[in-house]
Length: 199
Image (tube, rainbow, N blue to C red):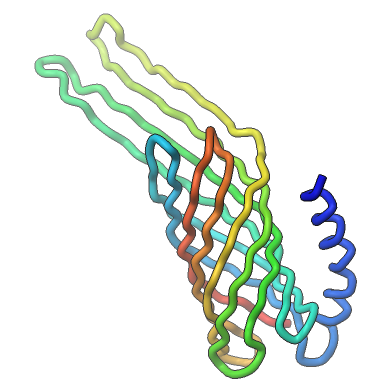
């Protein structure tokens, strides 16, 4: 109930954010980034390439609202020797996604502008695991399992720095930490760098 109320207040705040963003010197910007994500489960963890997109709407001199989406994909292939029998293979694939809304506090003057904040997100994951046992093994075949996590709400925090390179372009780097409920509790760290374009 508290989460739902918080979402309603943030949605109600967004028209004011849009009006402020249209004022001279307070324009919204759109960002794209790539980087590396580490996801840690109670039993294991893995790293993967990730891509992200976000929009930042200023609502005051130092505060912005920032919807953000991050997608990461991990692939791992292994081969197992079985003596005189042909090698067996395993192939695993995981795709993680996160769609969130952050409240950002940032410095609004100068070329280098540190920022930090946090918010809530809806997280999900889809994974598959395949085992290939070649003939003439008695158990030869391809065995595949798939599972999908129901979307769950998590919390996140982030920190980074913006570097203004022109009136319309900003280079940025950031670290974001997520606490999520993916097949049990999970913790994810995103290390991202990219460019935001101001219109």
